Length: 522
Image (cartoon, rainbow, N blue to C red; front, side):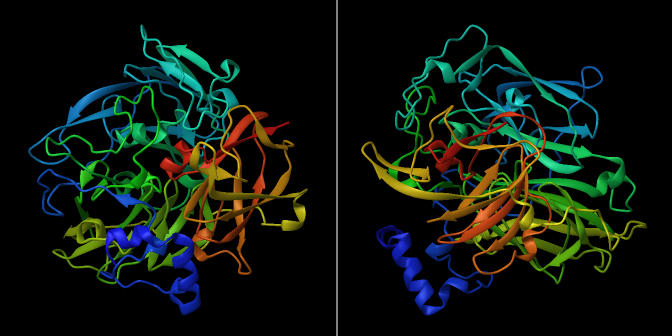
């Protein structure tokens, strides 16, 4: 099927055919063609000469250094870095690097992060998965503007409520984000969250890891130190001069939001980056390694597999350790989602190469992710214990109410947009009011692939349609894969703080095109 034919066939029509023929539940072998039901966006093609896969060493993001105990300072600035060998790319990075410096946080240690903006555009920084007061959550209209610059908000993607001055807050030069870190150990991340422009600003580099540690996890004999490795997986496309390609309607990102019509479903690149390097290689010993997998893509979904018979042993989800480990031959990971896994290389001889592949890739380039090269025999005293943590039971009966939120593309007077319950996002207008300390069932329904992310609150997946949760749904989460014409029930616990929070689709193009909603905790 050509790209033109694929666009002509609507998602709804294809899914109806697939359901009728049994294709909807089929699995795809490595190298199989990507069917429209699995596509999450349109792919940009790079014009620059690309390196051969598995020739660039895997970089590890630098660890941020506190300026004093409990206090960090990060500067958002432009910098030129070598991503594609032989050329340079301008990134907008925290401290000028992509991914940004990793924040090492400790449970119970209140942390303040001052974010200074030296970019030509406003920013708002969200700690994804963080339990933070609402004024430090990275609300999309709570903006930091570079010192000496002024900013006049536009009417927004569709002009809904964006002109109301009451919803906008501006900080000149910098802002202090306060993180109490009263939450369990987990792999979090931080990224830009500016109204209408999150997608292009994250695409240019405004994202990084934040890792919470605690005594409970430290006491386990899991891989540590150099064998505890964060992997920021994302896709990008590059112009002939090495710059990032992105189909913005306004490349300055100052006035007109949105992307060209062909990319409304989401923007995908044809180069897979891990920690900012194209298809890198990591040398490993014959030992267990903890890999903190993050899908930092705007729209691309991955189904990750390992060659050579290697397996993923999942030990953690978005919000920390599972109750017990779960072994997987494949992991589907959607934008914003994280999996903590252990991979055991002890059974492989030096010289063996194990490749991490993406079986949802639509081309050889996007099916390749990274490679592990076993180089030496080493001693390893780590192990994965049969019990990892105590988690609360997923008790549906504890819910005080059930709410349904429908994620769908709808047509309004101003054009097509991505909406929740048929309405585009209006800042400051909550569509739900919940009580602090209570539990609710939230039911997500959809017409497309929508990775749903809830700020502040954490949840457990109760089921998908008439089925229970899948093996990859285990643990406490803040982001869940909601697939086309699927019903997903989650049990949400509202602990932390009162105030204004939000939930949205983490396909960043969908988010920018109004697929967000506020809720208020009282």
